[in-house]
Every structure is written in structure tokens, then in C-alpha cells.
Length: 401
Image (cartoon, rainbow, N blue to C red; front, side, top):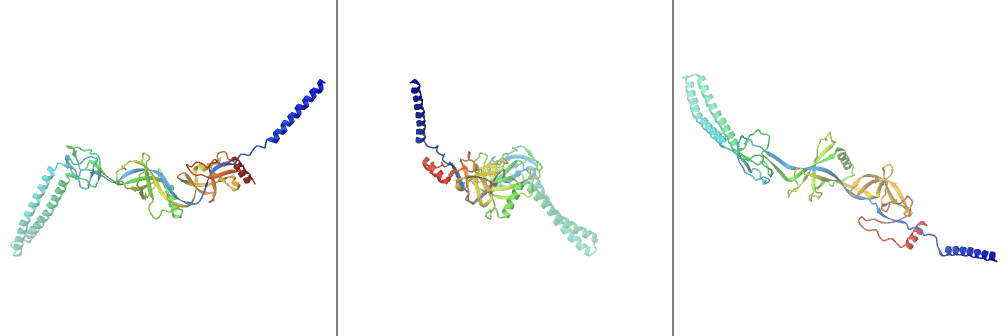
């Protein structure tokens, strides 16, 4: 009796377990497939791109004049304020003029003496000429008298030249500005002895509007740029290349400059050429010697394909690749060729076609062949809301079909 009760109980438990399992399968369902990964894509289209290159540069003055004395003497007075704007011809220093005034007076006396001798020599030559015609004196004496008269006239011219030289030296005792511009500090004070042959300048004047920017660029880059312009790949719009400046504090100078010329020689030590650009400087914000970053606008390239740099990765060999959403919204890996960057984008020269959708957001865990749910990517914008789970399942089933 006990054995039968135990068997019945075991059978009941087995049936209950089986019934519970069947009931669980009947009430449950197969695990739902995860929705396709949402990825942000950029559709590449040909567009015109302005190509720029950022290079280091130094500022230099448009004109620079080192002021030196042209006569010897003691400096009596400085006639300017250091750091001021001076005009061309403005008096800067005054050297003791007394020795040069004496030289001018001496030269004037020499001119007067020479002119006085002209009359005497001319009269003597005339008398000797008359006496020579009646053979009262020898012809040689008459010719000597005429020569003396001519020498007296030459002496007047020589004394006149000496007077002009003395007057020039006297005028140079006032040292004047050879150009207009901003004057620097004076290295000479009153009472100092200066000489015409001294090596050190008294002060320096610089014209600061406009200013030059001297930029160093690789000769290979310049050669590539010229070849692209000749081949029609770049256009400059018929004008000189534009240049923008980034100052030492990172700010951008508000006025654009113009490229003036590239040096005709290449530095054999660095392989670089010096490019000179000209910038207006009405507020005197740019000063000679300042370090700047010059953004050179090389030209415009038409029909360029741009891909954000965040969408380009490298394979094991270091070659650039992108992930593309292909047919059926499946992920494809494409090798591409890039030439250079333009802002935050790569310029792609091969591997992509207009209309290709390149993944730039959400590509971290994707594998080739995976089905994705793309949405248009916009920098700085939040991705659109994901569809409901049932809608996503329906989209996935439709994509699978």
C-alpha cells in the first residue's frame, strides 16, 4: 500500500513538472532580435573647397631707416620723443654747428677772393694782348696772362663748390628723419661725440603701415601648388592669394593680406622658400619681430569629396579606410585615398563616389555586413529619437526580407 502511494505521488510530480514545462513554452516566446544599430552618416557630394595652409611667419616693417650722423661733432640736443610718429624731414638731433659755420664763412671768403682776382687777371690779359700785337712783349707773356685769367675763373668755380660743400655739412648738423614712421629709442644723449663713420645708429625709424609677413614654405609644396594651378585643378580667381593671420595669443587679425612674391632662391639648408605677404596695419597692432601663424589661401578646388576626419580610420598597414552604408543598409569597409585636410575634413581623391553614405557616428563596434539604421549626421546636433521597439523590429524584418 505504501509502495503504491509512493509511485502515484512520483507519477503526479512528473506529470506536474511536464505540465509546468509545457505551460511555460506555451506562454513564452522566442527572444526578440535586437534592433539595427543607429549610425550617423554623411552623404558625400562634390563641392568647391577653398584650400588653405597654415605656416609660421615673422613680421617686418615696410620701411626701416637707421639714423646715423653724416658729420662729426658734439650732440647738443635731441629734438624728438621716443616712440612718437615722426614725419619725413623732421629734425631729430642738433650737432654743434660752430665749426661748420666757420667753414662756410671761410668758403665764402674764398669765393670773394677768387672773384676779385678775375677782374685783375682779365685786365692784365687784355693789356698783354694789345702789347703783343705791337710786339712790345713776347707772345709767351701774353699767353701766360690769358691762362692766368682762365685760372682765376676756374678758381671762382672751385671756391663756389667748396662753399656748397661747407653749406651741406652745416645743414647736416641738424639730423633729419629720412622717412616717415614710428621712431624708436635713442641710444645717444646730449653731449655725446658722434662721427660720420660710426657703426651704431643714433635711433631707428620704422614704417608700420603696411607691414610685411615673411613666411617659410617648403619648395616642394610650392612646386605642387604651381603644378595644380597650371593643370587647372586649382583656381585663384585671377588675383593674388589671400592670407590671414593668427596672432601670438591665438586671435585672428581682422584684416586680410595679399601675397606679394616668393623668393627666387631655395635655402639649401632647409629646402624652404620665403614668401612675403603685405598687411594693412592702421591701428599699429602688428609690430616688427612678432611671431604669427599665416593661413595662406592657396586657391579653390572644384568637385572635391569631403569626409569628416572622425569618419576615417586606418587599417593594419596604415592605409585610410571608411565604413559605408551600402545596399540593404549593410556596412561596407572601403579603402580610400586622401590628399590633404580641409578644416575638420579629409579631401578624398579615390575610393568613394558621389552619393555614398559614410558612417561618422556609432561605428565603434560595427562589423562588415551588419545591418544598421542610418540617420543624417549633423555636427553638434543630437541624434533623432530612436523608433519604438515594435517599429524597429518591423524595420529589421523588412530589411531582412
